[in-house]
Each structure stands twice: as structure tokens, then as C-alpha cells.
Length: 299
Image: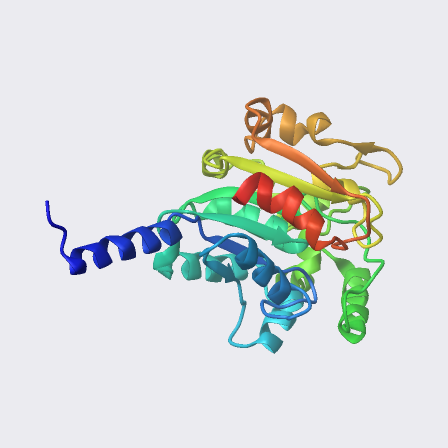
């Protein structure tokens, strides 16, 4: 059998491009005070993933039309509006049509979990939450980057009243503010976290149905975290109601016991992995990220 040169070139091209297409795309979402394309953070992470996964397509989410808007929106754009915007971005990206892996950093972790629950198309395959606050926060001790002025305003608004409607509708951090001393008000007035954590009287069972489509969910806790209070929120733990000393873990929570979100099903089927880094919030090395995240879940 004679194979013409053009046919051989076509077959070679098919092998090359086919191997690239076989790599599952990666979507990343930055944390508070950061942006999609900061060369010292998300830009560096994007390059690290591309360097270690040959031919992979990495989409770093930008909330707004430029980096400045993206950074500001991480503080002042209603989270539900951000989720709707990202759902549209993902659905419009043809490179994601067959599915993607998601990595969320800090608040980007719980935001991508909301994407998995609310927007099942295109399908999210693996979700890696790096320091995400899945049971919320009760404290705002540190300010990331060069955002001191904005952070002081955030603190003033939280002190004014995290559950005041104006604050809830316009301050991102208030929307995952979880006051253990006032659980009833939190459940009634939280416009984001109480909803995605099934803490409304009426449960949205599509949230559970969609989250159970994940192949794996990995949760990273920073053991020396001085930004997230309590750090156990990164593993779905939180303060027991009525005080700020005793903590419960994921399996002790009502959310888990009643399996409202599918956490119990995911855990018992071996699809939740708890990871840790013995460092402060988002302070990890390239080697740790490659070995703990990329090689375990994406390569």
C-alpha cells in the first residue's frame, strides 16, 4: 500500500492536534483583591499549568472589561451577578464544550462551586478549591495586596451591618459573611452563601444533582491561615452556633448529615479529597502546586 506524502502529513497533524485536544481545559478564578492576569499571581499560575500540561487551554476568568474592573468587582459586584456572567462566558467558549477542570483560589473556590451547582453546561469535571471559604467567614483580619483603602471600606460596611440589604447586595465579602452568633438572620438575609449551602427552608435539589456530577472535589486548607476566620471553613467546617470557640468539621455539619448538597454522597464514594499546606493563605510553592494539584487531579 502506497501512502502519499500529503496523507502522511495529514495523519501527523491529526496526531499532534489530537493529543492537544485530549487535554482537558482548565478554568481558574482568582481571589479577593486579585485579577485574572496579575503576572505575580494568576498570570504565574496560568503559565505554570501550561508549562506542566502540554497543549492545555487555560481560561483565567475576568469579571469586567479590564484588570481594574476585575479587581474592583471582587469587592463590589453582587456574587450572583458574577456567577451569571461566568455561566455565560463558559457556555460561549467552544473550547470548554466537552468539559473542564476548575481551580478556585480563596473566594474563587466557593464561587466555582456555585458554578458547578448552578451551571452544569459545559460540565465541570474536577473542582479544586484552594483556600475557598465554603462555610463563609466571621472576621476580616488582613488585606491582600495593595488594597488597604478598599479593605478599610469593607470593614466599615461589615461593621455597619453585614446583613443590611444595601450591604448584602453590593459587598462581596458580606455575601459569604456567616455570623455564628446570629444564625437565623444569616439564613434569612444572606443573598449568596445561605442559598448555595442549602440553608433556606426550601431546598434547591438541582444544586445537589449538579454537584454530584463532579468526578472529584479537592479542598485545600492553609494550616497557618491568618486571613480566613475560621480556616476550617476551607474544609467545610465552621463555628458551632452561638459562639466562636468550638468548631465542627464537615461530617458533623447538618449540611453533610442531611446530604442536602451531596457532600455525604461525594465523600462516601471517595470523591472528596482534603489537602493542606502548612503555610499562610495562598502561600504555596510551585513544587507543592505541581505535586499536590496538577499531578493528582489534572495530569
